[in-house]
Length: 160
Image (cartoon, rainbow, N blue to C red; front, top):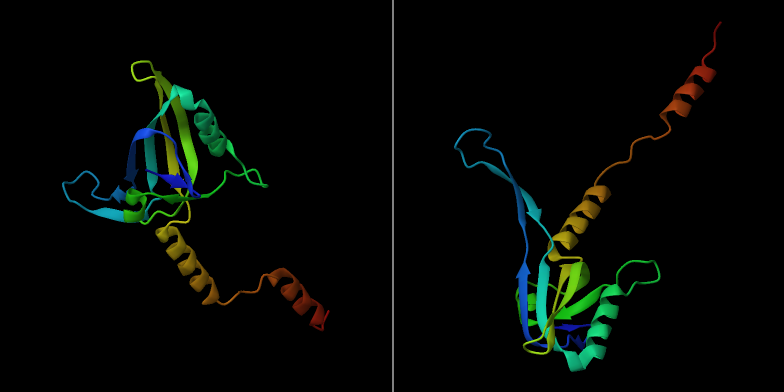
């Protein structure tokens, strides 16, 4: 079971997979060393697959319209997600991402619907923004008007 902004995603036999990438780069070159860099934790992706009966066509249409919905700035709507696996991964805010598909399954008279939800404002992202804010608060701004300052010094010099 999965809910988006309190609205339960329709269907049965719902399967949810949550994953994220621990980004890194191999630094060993051509040798057999195991040196690698840690490049952070990338946002989690919830992959959802569910079956929606043909008789619930309106529910499928509602899910599709939620996936296509945009805010006043033309960006996809960020939604609060509620499900056990998302809670375990500490995923709270998501938006629809990538491909959404619905395939007919005549044997069970249902559509097999699949879609992805991309994590937005992850814990790692919030921590990085906080670090960036602290770093900018701890720096001293340098003169950005060096040319005018230099020009003024030349004008103030007396001589031929």
